[in-house]
Image (cartoon, rainbow, N blue to C red; front, side):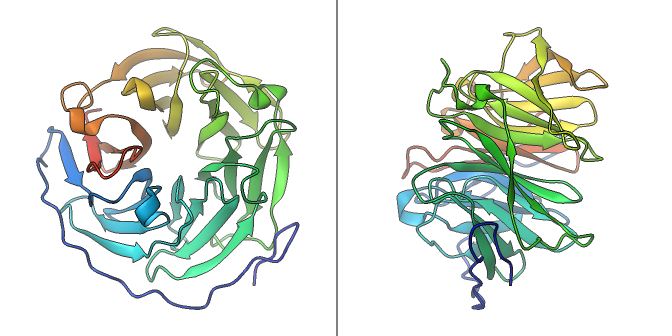
Length: 323
């Protein structure tokens, strides 16, 4: 059984049966084309993760299906239920290919939950903050840690982390990493949301964290925890409404949710600065159904995001982006 730094991690030993849902049509799916996988009308996605092979996972924040997690195949567009609705919203999520575990940020519940990515069984959860006192928004996995952001931090902002073993097994406790005072400051873009999406270098030595409200990007050294603002130039000069991040070598993709675009940033080799080279605006600009992208993942040579699910029951989508 896991244990957290403040309290024992609850263990759920009940396996969850897989409940198949009707597979939606893949509206367009082909090399070089945009593609949409329509999700159920009462499903509100916010996080997307890619697992082994072409497997994907999306979690719901919609009231009727909060906590439900769907898993499917990016190549066929077919999907089914992995985790039944729990009433606890599922925001950011990440898959660890070593352990086949799925780590899920629980929003206002203050929880970080770990699931078996095959059966959907809840392995346990960390109560990072008391319910209603924080907003656990995103999760990032490196070879030796799982990191979680708190987007509602108002004072003494921190980044939560859980150690991971050599095979991806979660450690028995979580801890906190202090963040700069900026992470307790509201901003002009989304005053309610502070630290949000994260990305890491392949060696896990550098984390990049976006502040949604301020539109700023920060660099953290995971050995010293020194955290400084990244100097951005080009484009709009900032990443307002920044949400999910994806780092591919020295290219950083920042989803700007309510701006309906993804900033493509060329980072300096030391990641202290970056230049916004261009924006991905399709299919958001031409297809009203794909408004408000949130998080981002990569499979093969394609990038995928999800529409936000902020206004169910309108249908939402897994969206394939042109790189």
